[in-house]
Image (cartoon, rainbow over the protein chains, first blue to last red):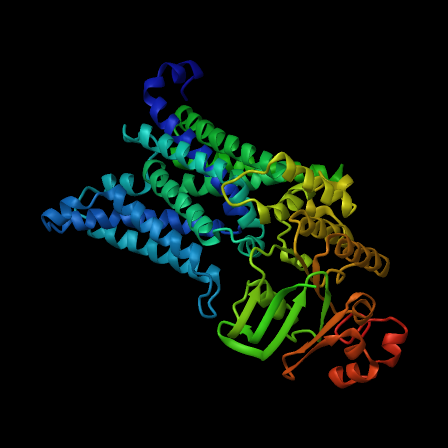
Length: 283
Length: 250
């Protein structure tokens, strides 16, 4: 086990992944409140898998040796493109001819997961590299991600803040929003596109498991801790950051898998929220 | 009186499938119109067609340009997962006059406060909407509709989840808002008594039988006309002020 002093002395090792994790935790926590309130938690799970599929597909195309086409396919761009397309589909398509929305989301999750495994088996790069790129190790991050992830987080956070009233309105009462001629389709699609971009970028850097955990668990915990919606946003973002930072810290000093450690910290916040709610009900 | 809403040869339905029509209807400013009929008879579909939320299968719905609707949906329309306060819910009614991307001004906030006081929910402003009783929720939703300073107040079974005393209080509130503001009121209800007491115009809807009748209360709220429509004896129902066949007291 590494001491706290040794941990602090190794800041050059954990600084970048901590920044990326904290930024991803904050923005996932904010967006996750909408994910939970709109009851689309499994959409975010499906999107993280679709994002992985986009990365796998780009490497598969690269491995085919199609010259200029292979070179032109950037893993990050393809991943974001495919994830955004899936998000827009989930946002705008509500009628699936007698198949439930959950069924379609489950189908999206499973087909993307299976395709990732199949493509991973056909990709010529080293299996460790592919797994790291597809699922993220969160131990070390691409230097560019130190700018990309916080940049995406700040941009998405600014949009969420500016259109907060509108996103809450459309999420709470879509019918009245349509009655008042609000751009419901654009707001729904915009929210899902933001979730897709954040999920795609953060999944590539940290892995699908912690990103899914950040999108679901801090918001659920926050909604247990408070009865005020605006405070829930703040608490959720804070718990997202803490899940990432504490998760990385414990993985560093206890030599645990980083993504799983972050997800476990988010789980602990959820359990704390659940206990808080039970205690409050009894008092 | 000025015509606010006009339906011309409108067939109502969902996803292009007709359920009733063609029908014609006009509602004037200041008028109180009650939409009555059995469960599943197309009342809410007609209401949503008037609001423009469900497109007509055929025909035209003309509304006065710039009309503002104040809409009170059914209680169960809202997800209790949202920890949203009464004040936040009422604020949403004001969004009828505040476009997307804009914030509420001081005058908007004053209007929201007045609406809460008017509906008797000012003291509940910080409470969560989900923690309210059925009657308090309806008052909050009426305050929300009023906050938009509507030309037409549209209510979908506003007294369905409240007791008799609560029902009377809510209907008195709606009626006083109509009188003060001059807004038209269009209300779906199961309760014949309510329609008999407040509505000037009555609309009887039964999509299963393909029946649509509209006219003045004096023409349609007679035991004979109602017996013909519902196929039941209504003399006692109207006399004793109980509920209609789609309501609790049927």
